[in-house]
Length: 365
Image: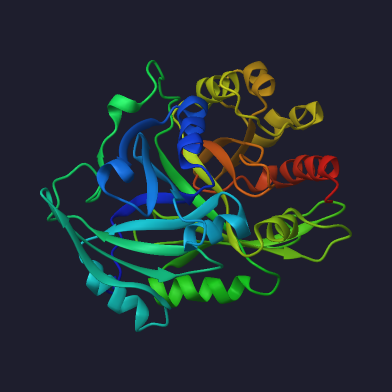
């Protein structure tokens, strides 16, 4: 089949924040992102302040509004800080909009041309689960830093911050309500041309108390992966239900970021104050028996709290942060793939028991 929506890459992920300046500092100091662009009052943007952060191929945009009655402010009031927009670079933003809308997508932004002295971009957007959107960005006629209205912000960035080895976005996970997973799987398949890579049911992802189901969708090239989760019935409130309760709608639960050296990256992140979930030492007792030989030293793996899993193509190493805002909503996964193309199925039980311990501390289990 012809790919009716050829997506080149994840262009950026935009977060709506209560205070974008302070949020951008957290990601700079904590995660090692570099502040490269800015849009705000000083650039004649009277609506909002946006900070462009980059590391490897990752681009995050932190945005907050100057108007307490704006959509941005209402979004933050409802959800807290969180992901609003996952933007894709495309060759033709108008055609991408047309192809997805005629297949059932709800329009958010009709194609619009935005220009400055560096040329122009064409931008369009559609709605997806909750209040999240997908923007299509056409850049071939733009030579500027990022987008029209952004200026170089390197001079205002803190000095001496080094990166932490993060390279790219591996996948982004969406949480939706009970009974809605298949609806959104169909949306990504029929509207955006994604296909299903993997599927997990409540037998795969369950503990004594909670369970969830998940299907992993990916675009035609396999570069963009979006697992969709929904809760499954259990004895207590699952992490998906907790997320939905605090985020007040479906949304992005976590973003997985790749690194070529997870031990070094995680050690550096911990040094800078990023908090991670921990697993019991019993997890490591039969790890080698389960996953076979790995290149890394097991003492280092256990000491850092890294999870390991293997599939037919190799193995992966992963670890999950605690929520990065006061509401128990968005968190990050750090992942290193050594051939494996899966998502750590063998770690699900240990991971979710760890999350449940955090839920118990919060009184939300």
